[in-house]
Structure formats: structure tokens, C-alpha cells
Image (cartoon, rainbow, N blue to C red):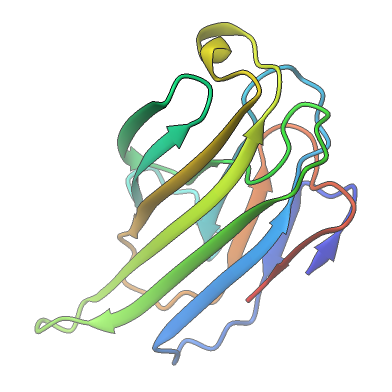
Length: 169
């Protein structure tokens, strides 16, 4: 999907019989908000609190910094937008591998492993030490609903997917 001036990219009508899905692409956000820009990931248009858990590790270049985060009981998985932030037009990359399998009890388990890069432009507030930093992330998304995933939404929290952003499934 290639979009401009849209807030949500939707991959729909995904057959529920897959073994693995790969979502990948590159892009950047068009916001000039001066704050950290996020990309919310949801499955099956589901925003039920408690259906998502996610975590990531990050490294950034300005101070050889690093960090980690785990969030539980959420209504989405929130990632940093891969690519330029706050008027920077450098594209970042996103690679997400989503597995769909059944355990011994027949309950579907869905875990996405992801990695991505971004360029953090001028950011205000508690993230100011990350200004003008190259950042790399790796992490996971756990989705607790037991139905097959038939839709994936990538929604910007601020701004839009910049023209020329390309993501494919």
C-alpha cells in the first residue's frame, strides 16, 4: 500500500489460513508537531483494552544510549514511527514477522516480532536527549484474541504517512 495524506494504512481481507505474515516497508511521517511520533498497530480493527502487549529495545546514536519498554493491557501496540520525524524526510524501515499457530489446547497465539529504524528530529520534552538521533529498535507484539488475523492497521498518532511511504504484506 502506498499512501499520502492518510492517517491509517489498512491491509484487509487477509486469509485466516496463513502460517506466517511478513509486513515490511519504508516511510516517514509528515507531522511537524515537535513531539515523538508514533505508529499504532492494531489487528482486526480491534481496540479492546487488554488484547495487546508489546515490548521493545532501542539504541540511539546521540549519547550511545539505549532503553527498553514493556507495555501490558493495551488497546493497540504503539511503536515509534519508522522514518523521519518532525519535518525530516529520511525514510525508515519496518520489518514485522507475524506468526499464527495453535498450541496444544487449540488456542491461537499471535506474536509479531519487529525491527525498524528511524531518524528522530528535534523533539521537545523528556525525549530531548534523543534529538537528531539515529535509532534502531527490535521488539514484539502479543495479540491475545483467539481469532485469525484478517486485518492489520498502521495508524499514525500525529500527522499522516508522508507521500511515498510504502508498506506491503
